[in-house]
Image (cartoon, rainbow, N blue to C red):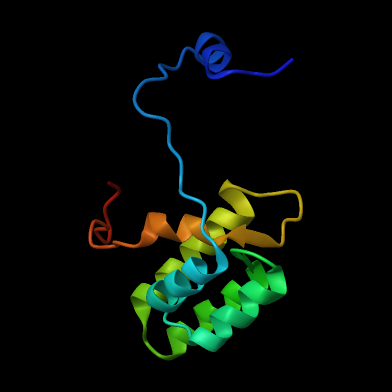
Length: 121
């Protein structure tokens, strides 16, 4: 038996309305491009990581390295994106391995201009 959204709505009394949320699947080339743009990593580093992971995935340990590097280089937007992707991978959308995260989630953090420091949106 599978739990459906209708079951969740009935049990938790939460209204389920609107469009279903989904992210497009990325191939390795698209994932590499997104990593280069969003996290300000070198193309060769992004390529090596996605080749090692055999797809549009990155290791959480690699994200920590990218985060620390961007902090040292004062690339705060890229550091924030790396941190948020790490957070998604290890807490919010944790998978069975608990060591990798899909690069496609980085699409959620492409535009950080809506984030206001000190306020919760």
